[in-house]
Image (cartoon, rainbow, N blue to C red; front, top):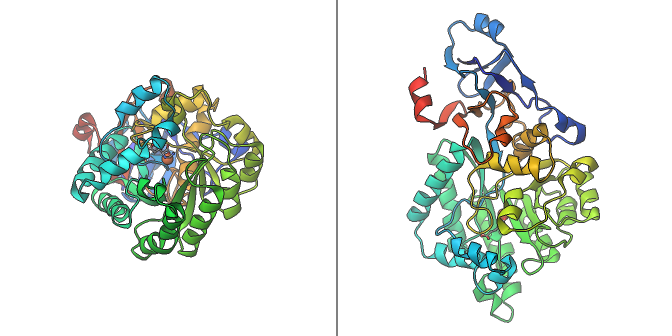
Amino acid sequence: MLLFANAAQVVTCAGPPRARRGPELADCGVITAAAVVTDREHVVEVGAQQELERKYPNADRVDCARRVLMPGLVDSHTHAIFGRPRYDEQEMRAAGADYMEIARSGGGIHASVRDLRARSEEELYVLAASRLDRLAAFGTTTVEVKSGYGLTVDDELKMLRVARRLADALPLRIVPTFLGAHEIPLEARSAPAGRADYVRLLVSDMIPRVAAEGLAQFVDVFCEPGVFTVEESRSILSAARQAGLRLKLHADELRPSGGAELAAQLGATSADHLAAISHDGIRALAASETVATLLPGTMLFLGKDRQAPARALIEAGVAVALATDFNPGTSPTTNFPLILTLAVSQLRMSVAETILAATVNGAAALGIADRVGQIAPGYSADLALFDIEDVRELPYWYGDRRCHATWVRGRPCHVTTEAQGARP
Ligand code: NIG
Ligand code: FE
């Protein structure tokens, strides 16, 4: 047994094992004078410290030293496997080029595809492992990782094999998603029937192989004017469901196209981005189980003046999650707490809403809200200890790294040098 003692606050996020909505988002369960007992893999008990110290006299102790103990952050949307960074495009946008224009001229996702195809599995593994370490250093304990920079059978499978190796080797909890429908590859764009052929390749070859090899839990599509249409997205996601995989959708990111409505209709686990969601889209999500994953870092980095309508979504009763969208083109940040800052300052969310959106609702966006995202009995001991005294400081010290230590399945994940020394 391990007893986490002397936290200034324990933020439990405890409650039903599903996404929270509306008024349920008002309270993230902040308790004081509390301790947490784990059996190393799972949370056993949360309660008054004095009582738990009496009840578990032989437990090893972690001294939280007046820091804040929380569920580890659940980053349910990243493209963390990639080769070279795309800093050249940031300056092009500053000079007036638009994200979609850069993509149409063969840059953007296409640039990352060219780069990734030329790299070995080993090289990609080494790059991704160090980037995931950075995500972990900010308090993230679960990371969804998408393919989507390969866009051929072999290169997509290469990416997913990297994700599998990362999941086996790193302490982080990693959830793989197949995003072969991230772009129409350039070679297909220039052939007469190339577009239809690529959708067919996804549906009849790639998705069945990914499912058969157990390489992904989700299938995702970039549904956006200029990329995949709603009808193409529908056929790709229908094939995914038939293959037994769960669904995600990049929906209404830059222009409204009915993506949110499609995600709700197909029962997708999440619809992501939504900066350009329509009123009908909001209504459709509110009436569904689909989690709306907002990615405010992306709009910030692209220099857009619009953000997803978080208040309207929450007030309509939509289950809202937050994530980094960590990727080389539109959101090269590994700092999840910075996303919480943007959520409070730009999306007008309360601190409790952002904390639940980054834990319980992130877990719901990955279909694991019954195991991850709360400090409650039976939940995985996925914990983060932040160097703050009040949970409201997490979005407040913006851009700062306050994570002191994290645990995943009860095992140390990110460990600062100081925490390492202080470990029992
Ligand atoms: O979520 N929108 C599509 N995919 C990524 C961007 C990927 C890239 O530009 O490399 C996103 O923003
Ligand atoms: Fe994305």
